[in-house]
Amino acid sequence: MQFWLKRLYRDRFLILLMLPGLAYFLIYKYLPLVGSVIAFQDFSPFLGFLESPWVGMKHFAVIFEDYEIVQVLWNTLNISFLQIAFAFPAPIILAIMLNELRSNGWFKGILQSIVYLPHFMSWVIVVGICVIFLRGSGVINSFLGTYFGIDPIPFLSDPAFFKPLIVLQVIWKEAGWGTVIFLAALAGVDPQLYEAAVMDGAGRFRKIWHITLPALRSTIVILLILRLGTVLDTGFEQIFLMLNPFVMEQGNVLDTYVYFKGIVQSDYSFATAVGLFKGVVGFGLVWGANRLAKRFGQDGVY
Image (cartoon, rainbow, N blue to C red):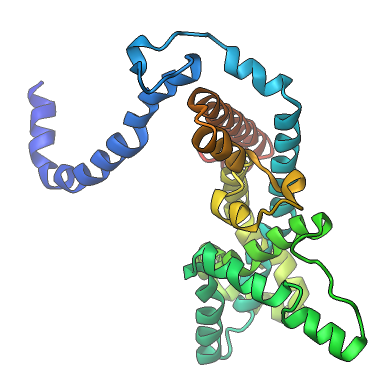
């Protein structure tokens, strides 16, 4: 006991620094988990937690029986895997391109600032810019009509354009900011490796293939594992702002579905059950991907 008291006294300033962060997680991350019990109740705000009737797994069973939620789940997985296939590699490619600009420092700095900028814009601004360019009388349709005689294309109301637009918006907004981690990983690469490769006659693509990409491999694996953990989380704000009655069937995802059920229709218990379902699936994907990464000799998340 005296040993632990001595260690607590020795690290008292570190513990004081840790307390605000610890309080944040307790209040905003762990304490709200208590409210998850309403997923097992027919919760009524007038009866509260204690008086609302318990219904067991009723709401979880509905998740697998309701046709609408099957469609919603398909939309969520479809958009999420499109983002993993196209938006996830974008910062890696961009980081490699920026890393190749090592001979011109000022140009590289300005370019990095430009590609970081969209990350600091809210989704309201990003979607607003998209609407200005792609609406019927927008910049793109005006250009196509004036110079090519093409009738206005319904980019925002045609379901075929919805998912590509979502992925392109994510790439434009987050690809630049996502390069920060990869550039930090590349900063630790020994320049002598590149010099030795040049002496051996390696060209630019050979250096990228044999030095740059192996240096990024462990970072890519860890970030991919963490991304799989949020595969059912496509982001509420962006999807909600892009939704309209014409694309509702293709664009309604779990986040917006929970909003419509939980807030608009006041079905709090079912919305909470869907949220818990997302958490369990995300945990399972992270656990499976972590095991798979370790089996192939890579560093896992834990």
